[in-house]
Structures are given as C-alpha cells and as structure tokens.
Length: 224
Ligand SMILES: CC(C)(COP(=O)(O)OP(=O)(O)OC[C@H]1O[C@@H](n2cnc3c(N)ncnc32)[C@H](O)[C@@H]1OP(=O)(O)O)[C@@H](O)C(=O)NCCC(=O)NCCS
Image (tube, rainbow, N blue to C red; front, side, top):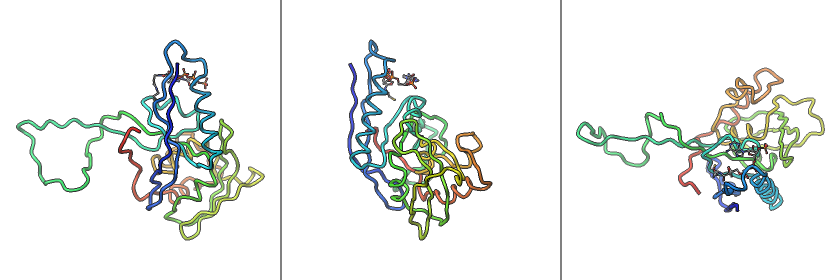
C-alpha cells in the first residue's frame, strides 16, 4: 500500500567537500490509503533513523515541493527544462565543449528539497568563504535538531556551539530555511524579506549571505 526507498550517498556541499547523506526516493501511497498519515510516519521514522546513524543531511526529489516543508525540507536545487527548436533557423555560434549553460530558464519543473538532520554537524562540515560569527535560533517541527547555535567561522571552518538560551539569537529560522541557504539555493536576505527568517539584529541576514555564499550552486544530475 506504500513504497519508500532510501540510499546512502555523498552530497556535494561545495568547495570540494562531500557529505554522506540519506537520499529518499520512490515515495508513494496507494490512492485508497492516502491522507491517513502513512507518509508522515515513514518520513519521520526514516529521518530519525538516519540521524541516529550519524547522518547530518537528507534529500529527495519532489514534484510537489509544498509537501515536504513540514518535514523540515528546504529547496536546495531547481530543475529546469528548455526546448530548443533545432530546425532550419537553428545554428550554433560556438561548438560547445564542457558544460552547457541554459540562458532562458523559463520552465520550472521540479526541485530537490534537502533537510539538515544535525545542525552542528552539518554546519561544521561545510566551508565558508567569509569568517564571522552568527547566532541562529533553529526551529524544527520534527524535533530532531532544534536549538540555538553560535556559529564561529575562522579560516573558513566553523565551530558550532549549542547555547542554552535563545536570548542572543540574531536570526530565527526553521530548519527548512537553513537547509535552503546551506547549499546556496536561496539567499538569506530573500528569506528574511519573505518572512521565513526573523532578523533580530540588523544586518545579520546579509552577514549570513556572505558567510554561506557558495562557489557553485548545487545541481542534481539524477532523479535518484
Ligand atoms: C504524496 C503522498 C506520498 C502523500 O502520502 P499520504 O500518506 O497521503 O500523506 P500523509 O497522510 O502522511 O500526509 C502528510 C502530510 O502531507 C500533507 N499532504 C499529503 N498529500 C498532499 C498533497 N498532495 N499536497 C499537499 N499536502 C499533502 C497532508 O496534509 C499531511 O499534512 P499534516 O501532517 O501537516 O497535516 C501520496 O499522496 C502519493 O503517493 N502521491 C502520488 C505520488 C507522489 O506524488 N509522490 C511524491 C513525489 S514528490
């Protein structure tokens, strides 16, 4: 009556770093058994097990992105499709070698939501192009990794300490928003304007943008 597949693979978290992650795939619930909480149960239990196994990150591909925010997932990568008419008026100005950049991303099809299962472990795993300090109040409806975290970046490496009090938090955000900025998919300043991040200290989201900047935005080559 339901299917739910997982794989353990590495996720490229930029600057040449890889992070072992739980990839979720083949999620289906039979029409006769929908809206009875089966997906919620499979997802919650699976993410908790992945965290117990020491993983700091999980990801999936979704055709309906709105479903997974409630499980802490934030958009990490977009997929676009462009149809090119290669009949008589088509010509190549250059002979392509290497990557092809899509100039007109008008069709948005799909996305890869990703969720941080362990804030301290995930933040310490990535590289930061700018040093600084940020205090994040991370909320998490699944209860896997909520807390107030002081992130101190020096030499591009982060040391993360979980604080007992939320008082000094500069940004309050759901783990899905943190997951989105982690891989550079969405800018923290944009999320603040959209009300997804609450800024308690002026300029903190801009500081987050600089610290969390990525060299190359994530892209997904497969639909795992
Ligand atoms: C999507 C699907 C797996 C949901 O399974 P389900 O067992 O009915 O989901 P649940 O009853 O556990 O619902 C979990 C939550 O998701 C919400 N939800 C479920 N289906 C949804 C939908 N189509 N759109 C928006 N929200 C949805 C529920 O309201 C519920 O929210 P809540 O717990 O916050 O109240 C099922 O509808 C399905 O198999 N669809 C076809 C295949 C598919 O779309 N797979 C996912 C690919 S992205």
